[in-house]
Image (cartoon, rainbow, N blue to C red; front, side):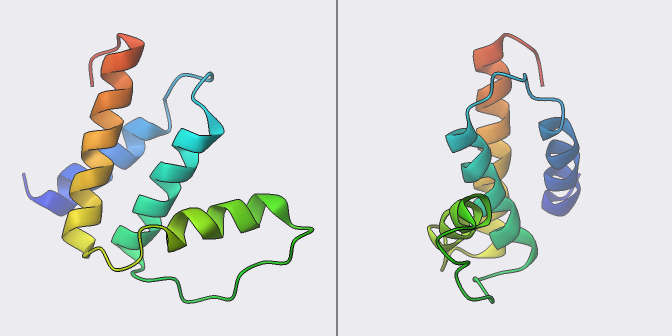
Length: 90
């Protein structure tokens, strides 16, 4: 299985993470996903009254400069780690 296929498989698995997954963790995954699929941030930062989108933008900006391959690998590793911590096999 290639990296992209494994990444897409783990992106699907991430949708089934436990409900108690922290927002901080979800933001990490979001940033890595966007970096892997889109590349560096290509939009302006949302205004301060749009806190949800601003947090997502900040998470994406935080991984700016990573290659798509590195972002995919980091995403896969993080999803595996979250499933191990929750006691569910990935």
